[in-house]
Length: 64
Image (cartoon, rainbow, N blue to C red; front, side, top):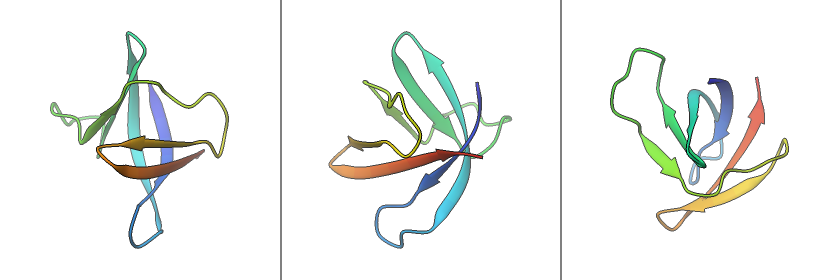
């Protein structure tokens, strides 16, 4: 669990999101209080600056 910055797919700006890893699935939320994740990644990135595709959208992330 922790905060990462996620790059948006269209505007390309960076947003801070709260990420939680559960059983090889990486979920992210707008903040720690949210109960419903914004999205989930089946195979999570293992290095800073990695990309992944979820629901047909490419995502980038970096540590905060």
